[in-house]
Image (cartoon, rainbow, N blue to C red; front, side):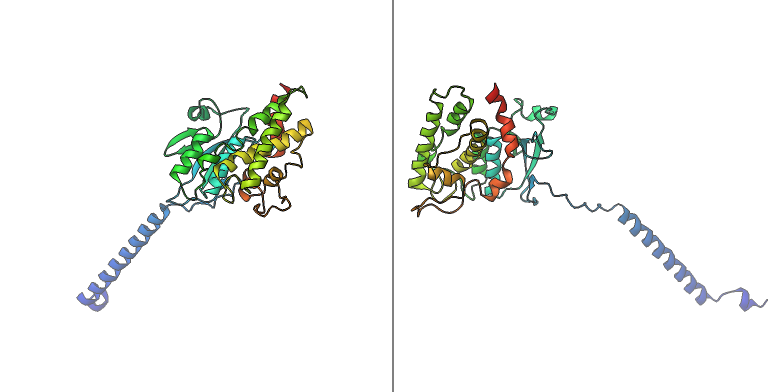
Length: 286
């Protein structure tokens, strides 16, 4: 075999070494790339839409955590609690994202008692602290998130404040002559007079915190009294009825269309009628 067949010239050898080195570097880079990709953050699967997890949060506007009573009649539905709905309405009207944690009241988890020792709802996590009581929660939300404003003017803060207690008295009453029905009618009449002069809402055309408190209570009143007493708000109280339903009194130019019950936020956060009925049963029977 000739020398030229068994040996390479320095130039050819140098070029072969360069090509081999490049191939090794390329293979090493490919392996590194594959290794890095395999440990990249996995893509999050799309969130399944939950009926009670409202609006997507952003990095600058995290979701607020809310504990609420679960339905006793339908799985994974909000239960009956007018105070919880008041809080949810406030969140909705202020366009605040929140995440609902439904609590089974027949089997309350241990962690729930850690944040609500009395086992009551609503409870909302604000600034890393769990806050109870709808009065305190809604006031805290108003202070922390003032836009849009929902605060009730002081001179109107007590409007309708005795309707709920007189409703409960009448609902529980076993004596038709004990005056509880008249006490409720007196409060509803007073509210009707206020709406006639100031409607369509408690503070005129502007929805306020008192409306968000009264609406859920009137919803419970309507369902519970209809079921247990065969009773409804008299037609003579047309401004109260309009406040609750899509009904416009005659010659009421100051009364805008719509009602508390028909608001999108109300429809979204209301309890099922079956849950309202079941929720009041112990008070009626007991």
